[in-house]
Image (cartoon, rainbow, N blue to C red; front, top):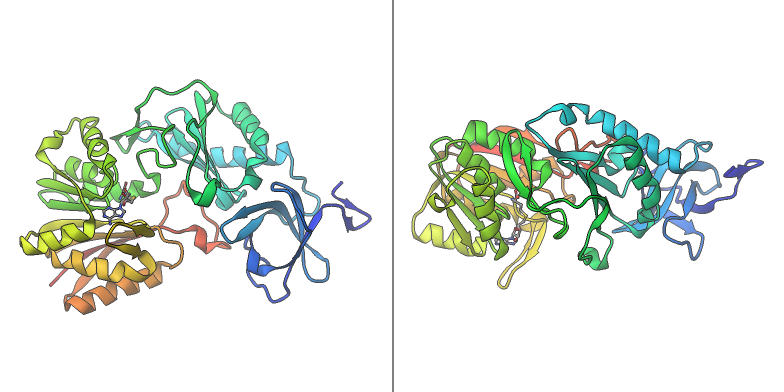
Length: 403
Ligand code: SAH
């Protein structure tokens, strides 16, 4: 029993009476909403979240993650947070992805999406029989045994890898992420709507492909690439370029600052039977490339913009919340009339409405007109809940430059 004679025996954390978020159903225990927390709580401690009068609101775990102090896991005082709780949540999440498991042309997808599946701070991705667990706090990492046991019981996994994303300042330190089962042979080739991707589950937090862009890659391949000159900026392993090439692009140009991006992009082309030498892969600062492209009067029929939320290069600091409109202006300048721009951001500090405002602002500055063709947020396997809108961080607008 966590409650004896109506009194909680768990550690307690009090929420300010002024707070609306948690009372409105948000599972994130934001540090600014907290008026009191028992001193010296260990990461992973089960806590009762109560209001100023001590009335029960919910039960969760203590785990520092950015500005959060933990996550509420249930609003039912009688529900126990134990092995069976984790198993129930993971089982429901796996069942929810049944159609993905049954689709032979897609063998990589998200199977557990944090608070969207009932446990904030924990995500899991599936890569052709292998599972990658992301732990976002030391607190949730305390439940490793429960999560692994559930996976063992509920799946026939080949192997399990993990990413401890709570390491120093969000940077990633482990050199071996292997946890259970058998080790995969790398590259592990997965499929997504028939597109092949080489993945490396044991290299860093970034395994080779960002699964949340699946529908955008499909749209590019099926609707927007045919016969186009394509510019893919912040291209990483060139996943968008590969989708465009498979969709019949005349040529793709991938630009990324990181040295590794050249060989990684060549590999993604090769595993799809494409000749990477027929495409340009440029290791350079995107801002520098834009200047070069303007000077050389280059223009493209499809321009893809997918910058990180925040990036610092030798000459530039880019912060999406501040600098996206200016970035877009440069992209507009080198897009052909009637050309298409795929504008994407994964920055969680602004929403779709504000993002569309950035687009409006950029076109106002350049004096052009545009039409929105389609919009994307997170795909179905990245399950989100309406009580935690910030969880739906992805914003993609596909637009046509009219003039
Ligand atoms: N669009 C990619 C993901 C982008 S991840 C995809 O779909 O897979 C962000 C990438 O931006 C990283 O690979 C990083 O190296 C690159 N990057 C960050 N700042 C940059 C800059 N100023 N110029 C070029 N690339 C940059």
